[in-house]
Image 1: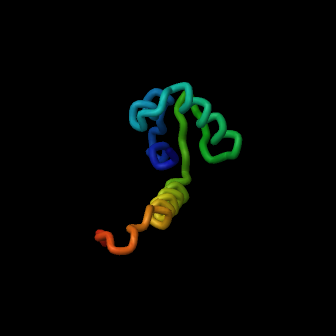
Image 2: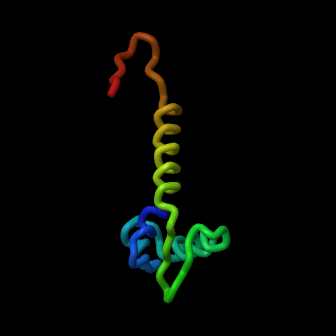
Length: 82
C-alpha cells in the first residue's frame, strides 16, 4: 500500500481500491489508520507516503517468511529448488 502511495501525485481511495482489489471502505479505514501513525498524509482527498523503502523491506520480509514457513516435502518426495 505504501509503495502505491509513494507516487508524486498521491492516490485517492478509489484509485487505491482499483489498484489493489481491496474494497473502498476497507482502503479508507486503512488510510485513516496509517494517518494516525504518520505513515501517510492526506491532502485534498489524496493520500501520500514517503515510506517506499520501508514498504519494500516489509514486502521482502513477508516473502522471506512465506519461503521459510512453506511446507517442506516429506522424506522421499521430490522437491523443486529455485
